[in-house]
Image 1 (cartoon, rainbow, N blue to C red):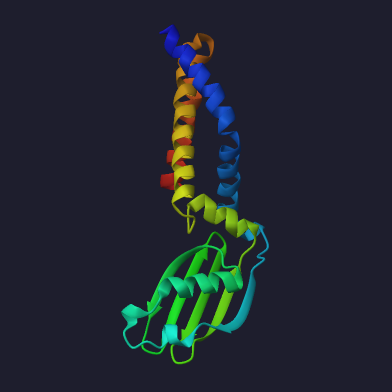
Image 2 (image 1 turned 180 degrees about the vertical axis):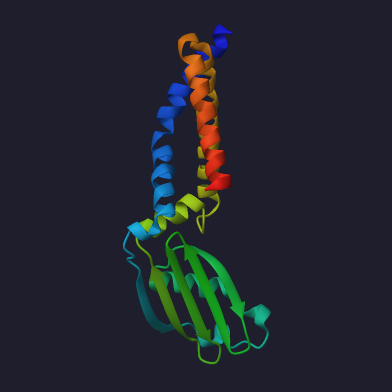
Length: 192
């Protein structure tokens, strides 16, 4: 049993310190998500025009349209951020959408001449961190960060509880506060 307490203490201390910033990040962004009205909106919308090679987009067989070339040219021309979210080919127009945390870029390309219009929307830092908190438009690697953060928080919570159970003088009060916290959360969920 002593080994369990020793390992729990070691894990609790070092995982807490290792994941301190990420726990702080998710705590702060929990508040910013819950109180969006506290922060002024700082969205910047840019509208630009340009053109891609007309022979790329005017092809009758839409399977032969070089999607990758078009996407990479648009990225290079406008320093587009985010991931490709949609590439839709209609009879007269191609619509291409990029999305990232706090960011969208939408292109509408005329298939007859290759001319396009771009609407780029950059939201403020609060929108960016809120999207990171939710994992919206963040990609696979950030999804892993969220998963590892959740695992760290679970381990920190469980090891903290194990440590409490080994402290005879604090155990009863600690378990009482654990129960009170659970009941308060339940009451707020069901009745408030």
